[in-house]
Length: 429
Image (cartoon, rainbow, N blue to C red; front, side, top):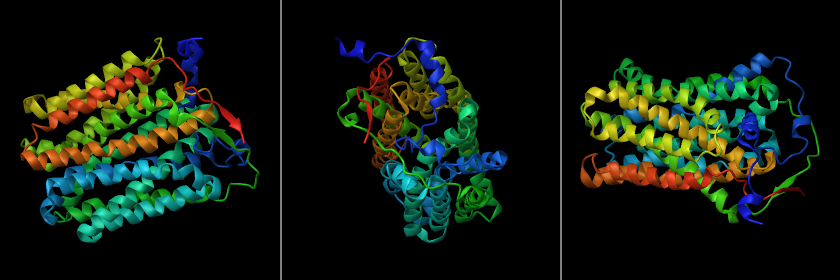
């Protein structure tokens, strides 16, 4: 039998119904996890806590970008060192994401989220208060914290709001985009409010992190004792399709984190003020909300996701090249184009994890692989931009990085977008 026929998926309309699994449960290897927690007595409080936590998963990353030039001047950082600064948090997303399921099974997801929110707050304080060493150390701690929470939170959302998974997917995505947009647009004005102290602008984001921890506190202690049934998924690292999904996740994320880390600096280099650059980045991120909600739904209407992947990547590349080379008069048009492309690319990456998996256990393991290896790969993009800018003294050559990463993402996406399953199965241990 042809392996592609053997692993082919059901009709697109049937697979479209599986988008309620877009939120992957990091504890899906525990068969009894759905039965170990009582129904929350105040679901509105849980919802508020989830939204506040999700709001904090991007500000530590997007708040630095508009301030990067100022921070570099104040501390004497080269472009390569600034590139390393934008790379470290993304690298930590990949390195620490695989720890999340283990921590959740050992301590409970709710306790881990609370503890990691506090380490995130500590990282924000560290990077804004202790010079160059604190800046790099705090960025590492913040990135590691976001990597762990980013894996756990979708599973909590899916578990506690199973009947509203589709709507909650939208709420979760909206909170991510809103947090990133607020930090990108407000950090420079906040710094100016405090006599142009960049440390105050970056340090402000400890406030929403502590507020989220306060509202999350009632969720701690809900876990009851249980003896979970573990599942094992073998062979993912030998599966070609799994690697294609992982590469697409990593490559599109690399472009996204280049935007988070460097787009305002590119705009400042072309004549915008730091405040204007932050507002443009913020606007582009807000636009991502529309395509991140629409792209998965549209992609499942066809026989596979290859065309959708090509379209969103071309939109993203068009926006990036517009920022680099087009006249500034059309800046907002390029921002909208970039937002539409990157929002769709990210949501499609999450969707592919679900659509390429036969069950929730395979999806959980594929998600861990795609995020762990993918974000590690993604971290190389921001660093490469810093190195190339340091070598050339300008931004024009960065277009080659955009082109190579975008083309590679399309190639990986053409493989990952086929209507197939990864050729692995889950089994009880």
